[in-house]
Length: 285
Image (cartoon, rainbow, N blue to C red; front, side, top):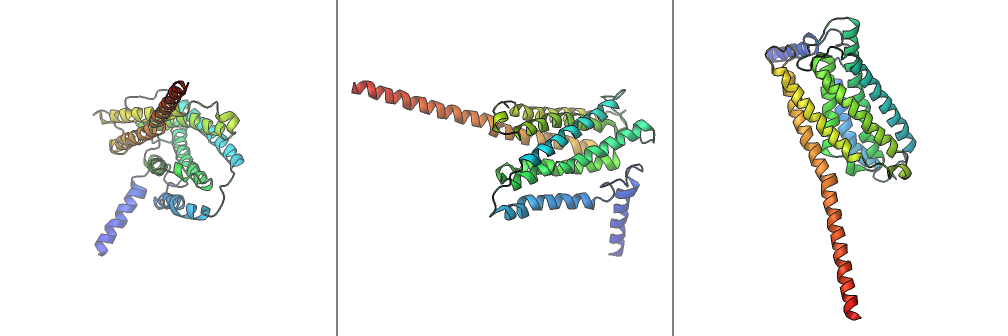
């Protein structure tokens, strides 16, 4: 038993300290994996259990001003992250970009941008918290919970072990999508007078699906023999990119195509009833 415990401790120390990037291993929420895991657990517990029970006998909270501020902050933060990612992309190799583990200004800027992207995954958990407080539990899907939880895990891996290199493509494209997405949420928070002009929601879902296709294809390039970027990342990114794509595609089909088909069927039924009624009126004449 003592030998087993010793192996577990050695394995934990290897994972937490030996394999970690010396520059980032002690940064906020990058040290031990238990704190991110605990946050994910508390998040899921609140969304699925504590939150609904708390709101059971309460009226939905009016969070209009809160949502305005939150979405403004998210848009600004996403623009900043996109700017940081784009600024250090001069000379980036699309085929295979190794990680620069040095302490040069550029390498540290990339590492810091990776960590800031990871921090954004925590603030984005508030998306779901607001759903619960507004009693919009129907919007809390498996896709939503899995996406937010997994992105924290990916952000942790990136910040602790791989702060830079080939994988930063995910952060670049994802922050661009988030600029569009949170801009849309910001406009919807302004009320019905603005919402009626927002026709492009479904295109955001299409953008998200397209980004997963790009991430999947881009990740496969790591498998080149001459690529020194850690190949284990393929096992993390490609299955998740595929899974996310199918989940978002299922949401898209349910939210838009099936809804449009239902509307068309309802309209056809109304037209049929109108035609039938008009026929009966002519007979009566």
